[in-house]
Image (cartoon, rainbow, N blue to C red; front, side, top):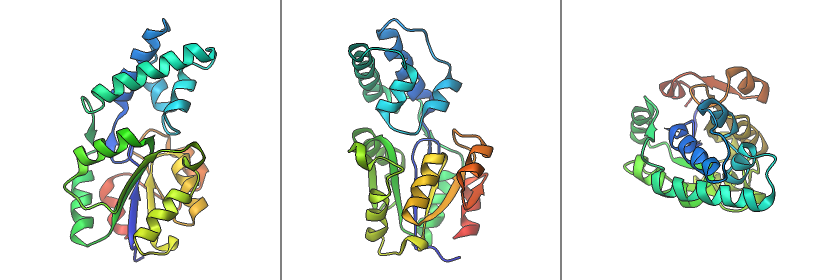
Length: 214
């Protein structure tokens, strides 16, 4: 298989962002006098953008309460998103090798764009990236394929020549919608069975295994 590009999800794929996200969610819940959520609960809620994440944490709240909670979460995350966030083991080595092979790389996340860009640059700024794209518009949020297809075009590749590596059924659906190859990262925030059921073309258990698919 000869690939002309790799697009990575961010949360749960390149970086372990769960601790900082869980802290922000619990700060928001405390702001509206709700009990703390476990880290495992937050892990299950991640993957479809900030409003959906907050709604899953506060499903029965009225709109003013929900808006207060989301504002508190946004404030806390903006100030502390990098406090406990690190690349997953093996990711730097993988990106080193992809760069050495001149394989174009990009990041596509459902994290708000205002957080995606500084986090990606802070953690992965030493590698060349064709694009860094986060959540901007609701109708283009993954699994909508349009932003992914824009990235593929910037890589000067066909969809069938590009892989999307992600850790969720949302990522797999995005890849399938765009016609790119869906690679599921099992070290992330979703169970292996869920990734298989979502229709991933490949599952990898460690970042270095991606090199065998390139």
